[in-house]
Image (cartoon, rainbow, N blue to C red):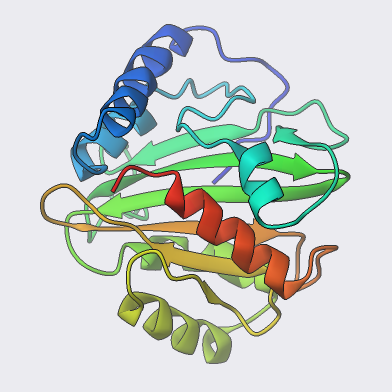
Length: 217
């Protein structure tokens, strides 16, 4: 769901900053957890031309340190000058889009550690199984088909909030998030592609856990 374009975001950068700042402030002051409406608002404010700075308050360097992963860590691709954020909601024009059956939104951000690119997708929907929106992403990153996706999806849906669930290859992890109000939310972390990553299974799990811990809950 990342739109890989070279242009930097301009039109809605201020809108993203205002919404994200309000979200960060609520978390830092003991406010409510993330809500479906809040994530949809942030996703809608992301400029379709993209950018590199994630509109959600993830401190990726801090998460990498907590997971014991060394190397330069930050937003954007490791070796390419490409847009690294995107947002999508049920407000789009595609009647067959990913949120057609379960309204909500997703914010996708690319980070890097050394020369390794990682994607962090934060998704929230009105009804259960928010992660189902991102199963095509899981399939590509993990290199698995339905036989691998179904048990992963079931385990992720049944897990306690804050507990990472990994695919067999170990390079993709999902964590259910606490929500303010009704709905369902998950964080999906992918490292590498097609089931291969320079990070260990334990490092991917640690990163996912640390990032989920940064979301107000």
